[in-house]
Length: 106
Image (cartoon, rainbow, N blue to C red):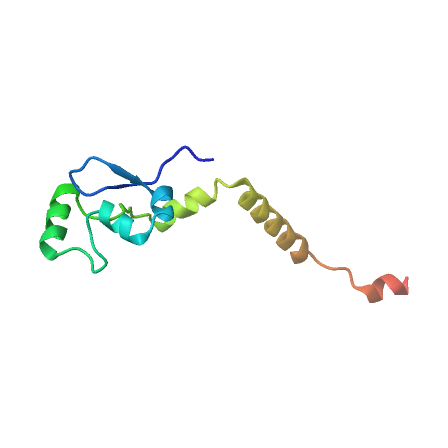
């Protein structure tokens, strides 16, 4: 079992946390009450207040270039093995193939 806890603030400024697994077991009305909200959501002023208090509800992202992705993929030993076998296969197919008619006429 993971030691990380998924928690949600119990209303800005309250300092309490609502454990995600606990929230999943509670009736919806209890969760809404503990989070200081309603079924219709927050008012614009309450949303602005919470935004100022805790910041935006957004995930941080980063830009990854194609060469960076290629470089990280080339570190994978299975990909290197696959590339090596593909090259060997191409080299073996590119060579002259003996004709079956000259071998049977001898």
